[in-house]
Length: 268
View 1 (cartoon, rainbow, N blue to C red):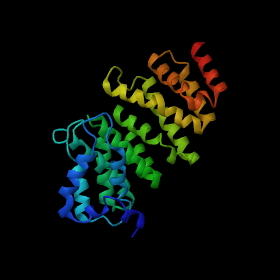
View 2: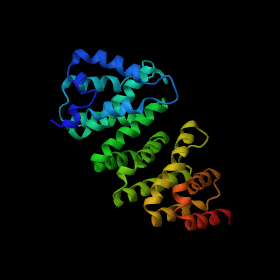
View 3: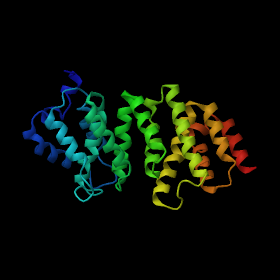
């Protein structure tokens, strides 16, 4: 047994189904909800407890039940929302150790959460997928590639939010994939295939307005080439995305000449 897992503060309670109600009460009490920021430390620690093959049938059923709680039973900014928020991240950790049928359920739960009306659950989807991607980037790529052709705006936002995760971007191939996927999304926006003026598009735009800079920093040649492509558009929404990324310190300080070059293209 992994000693790091056995020392996890949630591990003991997860071994005994009789303690699940006590565990639920504990997480509700530690949620920091209602409030602007959930207890990310507690959520992360709970998820980390699933980083091994110890997971019992009861513990899996607990994750399955919590992760499926709809907004009616776990409303936004209510302590009860913290349970699916934690469970989804735990599923991301457990993915590596799960059998194929459970892995499919995990991916389905993540995909559903990408489109959740609760913003915190959409964040949980990205965080869970990051945990999967850190261990198995191929699984992440296969999921995104399969979804991309028919992806909703919120799903596209989940793709870029998931990929803008430094631990996954140590591999140059992962960075190039992130840029390729981003360019595909931007192409669809430029071609009018993504509906403007909706809340979902606003969420997608916000994600693109920071995530691109994370990718460009790590692959500047390909990244600035992509930004240059979209800098010359007259579409103000596209200009906003490009301009926002150019303004991020990670680019403005490190690649000031490239940033200035793209800015000149926008002002031409």
